[in-house]
Image 1 (tube, one colour):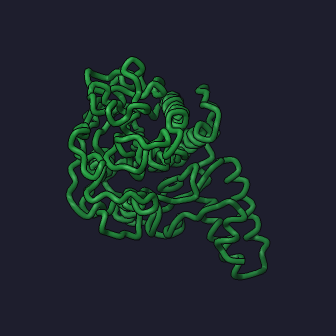
Image 2 (cartoon, one colour):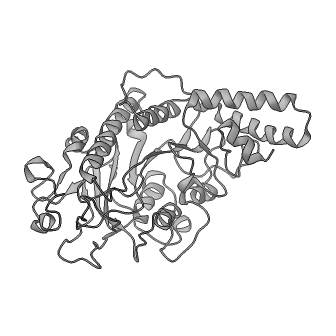
Image 3 (cartoon, one colour):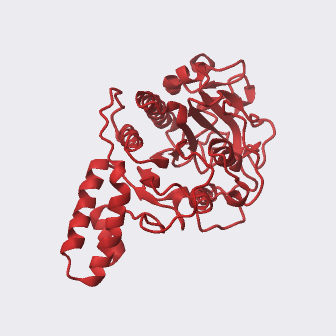
Length: 386
């Protein structure tokens, strides 16, 4: 049996490359107790109907049917507001714990799902191909303390994303209790196996058991999470964070944003799930006194075109708006809103390179040098309270 097949039968994904019984480099001068929670909006969320430029007549000219009516918008200022389905995020905005970064993208954008998400997750230029994710490179350069259960945990996807590649101890986890039951099976099987090759495979998975032991948080939260896959994923994430051993990154995926047709109902449902899930996650983090040491950041492979299509939807676009939330986040609008009167090939021009978000995490949240990880200097955004 191939190792990959065996792991698939167990529902396990190995800690990538480095395992707990291997030597680590000296711990960096970083505080990985500052947790990063990445929320992938898979398929490419429509930023224009998320952060709505309701005061711009071009918006309604380009979207005569899809445009969110001015009276429905959750107004943030005299120019822009949120989609009404994001009502659950308004208390965070009012408490200045929600930052919205406008015009996020990169030069020479690629509109293929596969290639663009590869660019985002590897933090590469559009013409550059990098094998490792940006977080994997960061943890290789600046190792997470060996006492941590893992560098990162991926929930809601089998794809490692920015944690993929060499140098990262990452686990795919959809249910902590199920994972631990399966991991114990691997541990027991290793002791009983008389097949040397299989015993070796199982011994490796035993190392995963040891590393993952701290992931089974047993906290009983008062917070009620929304029903559904995304709410359940965030509940699992909260349990992971509440465990006795640390984890530096949790990545959760919310699927379904490729809205080429029938966008209004689909995006309404997804944004409501997003907002209510994030509000619940904040409440859970407050229960365990982790909100001030948590930063949540959304990302997607691209945004959508500003002009609606003929199927009551939007096609693949460029510049987008993304959320950053947390107890230490200095809320407000950041970046420059894309112009709807100066389009290039029918798409908006970006004003904030997406790697500036990553530099904000690496340099301002973790206190590290991002230049080697990001292969260049990208100034972080001043969206954290000192």
